[in-house]
Image 1 (cartoon, rainbow, N blue to C red):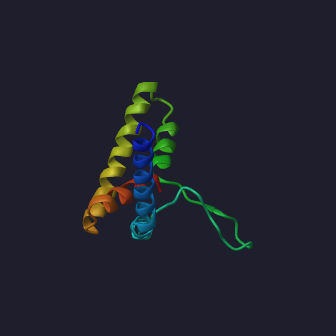
Image 2 (spheres, rainbow, N blue to C red; image 1 turned 120 degrees about the vertical axis):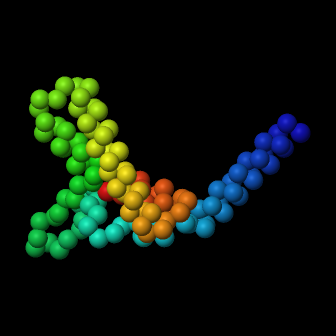
Image 3 (cartoon, helix red, strand yellow; image 1 turned 30 degrees about the vertical axis):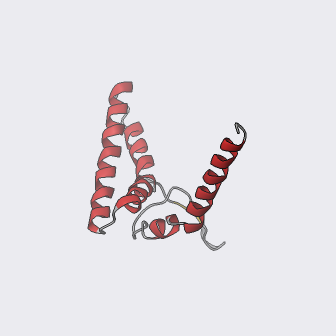
Length: 116
């Protein structure tokens, strides 16, 4: 009896995970989450004639702008970084609201928007 109960729970958990993965809601949410002008944090494949374009995300942009300010101390730089990321998150949230995204799709959109 002690072995059977955990085995049943493991089977139910595996089944739930399989069902959740098979529904696959994230590609649709992420596909709608990349408006024009959004910068992504990885190199975009291009043809061999032009050099690869490195797009930088909003968080990385904040990090670069804070590190460019040499006069800031350790704690002031951290505060500026947090403020910049929070402002970027608010901008992304406004875009999600304008696109009328709800629930998990909005959450995925905001995270990908701030990171990208």
